[in-house]
Image (cartoon, rainbow, N blue to C red; front, top):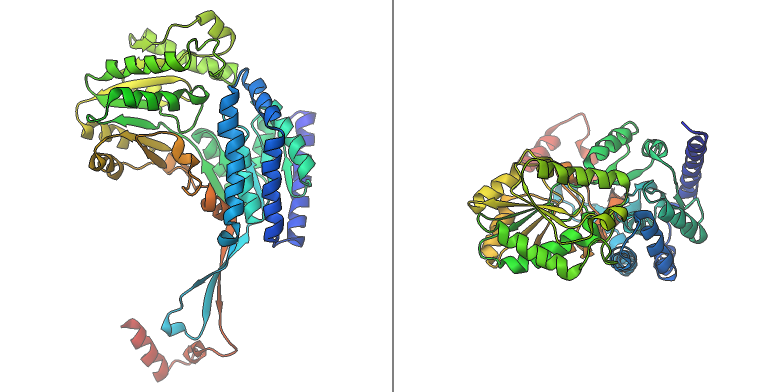
Length: 473
């Protein structure tokens, strides 16, 4: 362990203790102060939008500014505004009914903050995926420590500075550092740990948290399919799939990871997708709207998958582009691979880049069997004009979220819980679901000085027999 890492680990342990002590002294942060915290987040976003977008672009090598504005900065502003608007209702104590056998009495559910939470955010949307959980945590009345990805150091340092100007360290703190610091972070005794990232690392995070019985939310990934049914126009499907796949150069956890089309339509979808790409990005190597791959490691992984497809004799289709310029800018042109075998890496690993396998199916049931034979995906997209057909696909599959004739945007609906299932994650957030993630729903039953239950204490007699017989009916 380096001396720098050791210092960072000691610093974060000290911050955790200070946040815990501060929470003990201020366990029930008033709604007015929580709303002020949310306003402060929105103001931070508006005031420093250009700097945030530039830092993200610096980390990526190039990140389309429009993508950073709409998917990161504006998203967080709207998330904070939504939480502020509904916070009073979300926080309200709920009264619940009491059975006659337990009367007289009153029952209620108190919504109370869990305490100090840890947030581990990834590199692909480094601002949104740190700040949206923070919005939920602050709305719930918690204190938070954030560990950003080491792949986005410029943005991490900027967040540390900006949040440090707005919040005291005993309320919100950003911890920077590499994998050693991240591993130590996940082993801290938080009251809740929120992780966004790969399934592989998610398993390690869950194990680390389990040592201290820290509850976790895991926002993971998986291979999200786009299923085009026979009645849906190929050109329309291509416009939607192409946009979702190539936003952020495919570095999106809910991007379509492979497309399923009726057998014989593979070439038609490929041609339509290439038309979409050439319209959106005339030259993917130099177009400012097209984002680079975040690191050499990720670039090499993706190019190796493409090379493996070529070496296996598969059809690999790309639009015309300047390959040398693309390589120099760490960009990968949108790439289509036709009918790769199911044991190929493209069909075994989450791609997380601008590479889309297109597979033909003989019947829709065959397509559904392929999807359901795998781990449950984080998202599933079905393109169908027939509502009954779309519902059939939803009925026969299971995924974290889904879109019908659209992709990606289900995560932008504030009141839709966003999360995975099985290998694609556990727990959810956004809107009230996010508030509840960082909230303990405390059950309370109230009675007066005397309650009939006192009659049921030993020694048991005829009164107990009459009451128990009545309850058994």
